[in-house]
Amino acid sequence: MTTLAANKPAYDGQALDLTGKSGARAFRNTLATVLISLAFVLALIPLLWILWTVISKGYNLLFDAGWWGESQRGITVRREGGGAYHAIMGTLIMGLITALIAVPIAILGAIYLVEYGKGTKAARAVSFMIDILTGVPSIVAALFIYAVWITVFGFNRVGFAVSLSLVLLMLPVVLRSTEEMLKLVPDELREASYALGVPKWKTILKVVVPTAFGGIITGVMLGLARVMGETAPLLILVGYSKNINLNPFEGFMGALPTMINQDRTELALEPAADRVWAAALTLILLVLALNLLARLIARFSTIKSK
Image 1 (cartoon, rainbow, N blue to C red):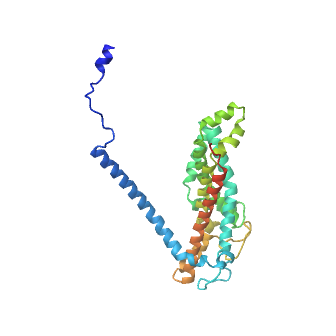
Image 2: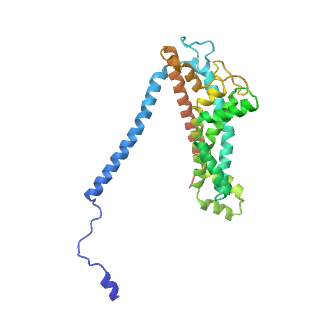
Image 3: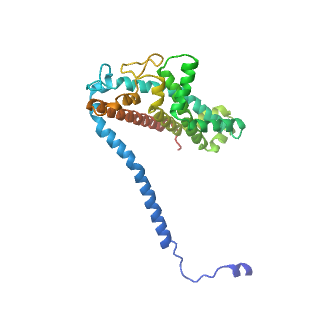
């Protein structure tokens, strides 16, 4: 008791003021706030600029009912009229096929990396290959599919070949985002399920995946938004058609990126320029609609904590 009393700091009777800030700390805090806010504004400027440019130049044609229900068949660059129905449907069809192939593979791959293969050589090899695939340019993926689909097997240039190349681009995005979402699921949920005698596959299916479902859907939409705007695979693996073609296994097919590319060399002509900006705005609206749909699905499907 004597020793403790001797080591106790002397109390001078004045209350300690813990609410105030020193001048240096306040300056650093203000400086950091200003720099972060400035960086946010700088990042926002190009986005708003692009949106304003596309919306202001492309909104006129979107109010025309023919834009959503007609194709460009028989329409030349100097002639007004026609629509983007063929390109919208082509973009959606190829995007849907891409998602149907890539999403199951990516989600199952992420489940393997997180739930089954953690720390194994196989998991490290898969993770390494996914990292490489993430950096592959779209034109390289298109050339690879061209070599296999057309050169080796002798098939024609069709929309399905485009979807195959887009799978290579979408797969790493969805797999990585799903992997991160699964890692965020608390281990306590898994352990509680195991303690009740639930097998591992059922725990993943009924507990882990539903808990991370919102993040998984967001990753899927990000991957889909990326591939829907790709142009190189469309130029290499399928020709642009102004006609309506809903069969991805036969003939050329229109898509919004190639519709933009078709008229971009004739921007001096007002009808062509209007179609380019309207197609760009339509593509942005499609991606926006998919993101809103994903948020709605995630909102009503995620397990809610009470």
